[in-house]
Every structure is written in structure tokens, then in C-alpha cells.
Amino acid sequence: MVKLIILCFLVLSITACSSIKLTRAGYEEASHQVIIREGPIELRHYSSLNLVQTKMKDTDDSGFMRLFRYIDGNNSSKSKIAMTTPVFTSENNGERSMSFVLPEKIKKEKVPAPMNEAVQTVTSKSGLYAAHRYSGRRIQGAPIKIQNQLREWIKNNDLQSLGKPINAFYDTPWTPPFLRRNELLIEVSQQ
Image 1 (tube, one colour):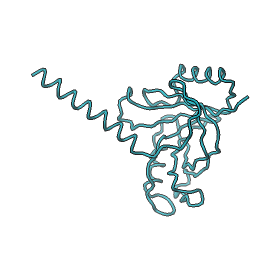
Image 2 (cartoon, helix red, strand yellow; image 1 turned 120 degrees about the vertical axis):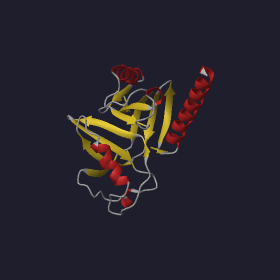
Image 3 (cartoon, helix red, strand yellow; image 1 turned 30 degrees about the horizontal axis):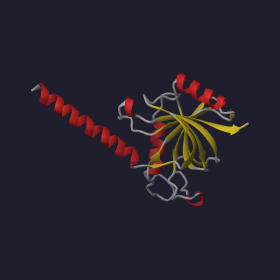
Image 4 (cartoon, one colour; image 1 turned 60 degrees about the horizontal axis):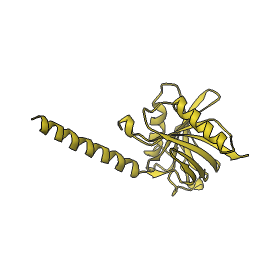
């Protein structure tokens, strides 16, 4: 009986893990080029991205729902827009924001206007970003250890930090923490 329970647990675990991988792989990812890869850290070049963005409060999940409603048809064209990864969060002057990346097929001039005034469409500028991949719970700020490692890597590679950290989350909330893909990104320039 114990062997049967263990076998069932293993089969369910393998199925869950493979479906998590398929779910992440099923979404379009924000387009970027990897310039350097050293373990969990990459130097990337991002072209400008079309984003839909909203402000958030500290413990407020309504930001995600506002953005989700936008891609679910609460926009000027009433069109559904495919979900992409990652979901970006950042903080600037004490204000937190969340952003969804719009699919590449939606060009800037064809981005539908939001119907909710708390949602804006913005275009990010292209640039270089240092990114540190890690797993674990989804929290607003990356763990201090990750932040320190990324800042040290930036310094050791003669790069200069240009902005505040950006958090990138790739997985659903029900993905086990040890399987989640999270990243901390910092815009950089060469000195």
C-alpha cells in the first residue's frame, strides 16, 4: 500500500512539474538578446516594449486584475490580448507599479486604449539590463542576497546602474516556490 501511495505521488509530481514547464513555455516572453551569461546572471539587451501598466498598493492584488481585465477585452477595441511573461513590478518614489508586456504582434500605433483610467499604455525605452534569475516565493523585492549579488556583478563587470530594480515574475501563483522563475533586473550602462 505504501509503495502504491509513493508511486501515485511521484506520478502526480512529475505531471505537475511538466505542466508548469509547459504553461510557462506557452506564453510569449518579452523579447531580448542575451549578451553575457554567467550562472544565474545575464546581461541582456531589450528593445523597446509596449506595456500596459497600473499603480498598486502594498498588499493590493487588484493591480493584476485591472491589467488582466485590459487583456481580457476591457480596451477600446474590445479585443482579447494574449498573456505574456514576465509580469514586471517596480517601485519609484514610493509608488509601486505592475506591468504586462503586450505581444510583439501589437505594434505601438495599434495598442488599444484602456477603458479603465487606472491603466495606462506605455512604451519602455530600449537598453541594457543585468538580470539575476532565482526561485522562491513571489514578493515585491528580490531577496537582499540576490540584490547584493547582482550589484556586485554589475560593479565587477565595469557597468553602472542606471535605475531602480525591476522584479520579473514568470509563473502562476500556484507554482511551487522551488520551481518558480523570478528575476531581478537593473538597467545598466558601460562605464
